[in-house]
Length: 394
Image (tube, rainbow, N blue to C red; front, side, top):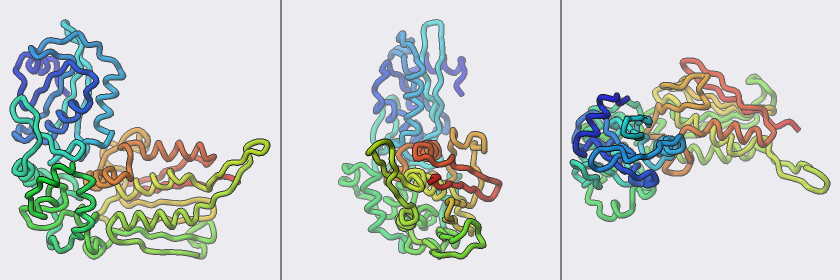
């Protein structure tokens, strides 16, 4: 976090590729573009960039009153999902003798290129701009020496032939601004690499490339599937009345799983008062979706254990291999989020499976309460994560 001494240095220095000043408090596009550019760190300072809000061009506080709402709005730029992959940033208020300022500190991304609304933003000296094809290539190649997440890493032994390019092209049209695609002169490999699905140095797909667009993901990762089962009784020794192993690219898995869950989620009319009736479900669909999406997004894909979705007459259990990750603990589960698989998280946000980062479990709990279901319970250890959704009492 920036110190008072660092802050005074930033204020007294000229604007650069690590500092941007503004007196505006409403221009969220400008703020987000600056955050995106700092996260890309094209000059490769390997140091944070700073957006200083409430500061004149000459480096003096402008008299801004930094409110809690302003700080919340700035923090929300991280979780809104328009900047992908999610940047590492902090938002703080500083009270100086001359006035108050808000500081957004942005750390260089381990997964460049970072996009805001489908465009890669960079900083060249004191100015922001849109990355050229060569800039994007530099950022893509730089990622391979910095990658820390398993899903962004190379998958040796694979090639572009293991990628379904038609499905990738459909995703690219959602992830990348149309004007960038129209002016595109990149090779297919470079396009894949720009979205963290191909490793140019090793000439192979990444783990995410195989999971998201692979012709046969399970061949390469035996645990990359969902085991679905419906039981006649309330324990695992009961008769199985339906079962399936759902495999393929992640979109195919999610579609098939949603279809099966809708089939077991019965609806009925419930009387509210007088002649008024309302449609209720055994489980709120949003809650089911969010818990399943959470399992797919956060599971440990290095494990050979599949996600298991077990449906019983009184509940649905969703088992996900891999315990809690990063800063998340059992106590902070509904308040914090860390991303074991940031490329998969980006994919799910781009395609609308996730509307806002860090809200899935809270959203699921809210819909369970509104539908009259008991709260979702969670059990976790170092190797697995279990979410249990109980049926709405009749």
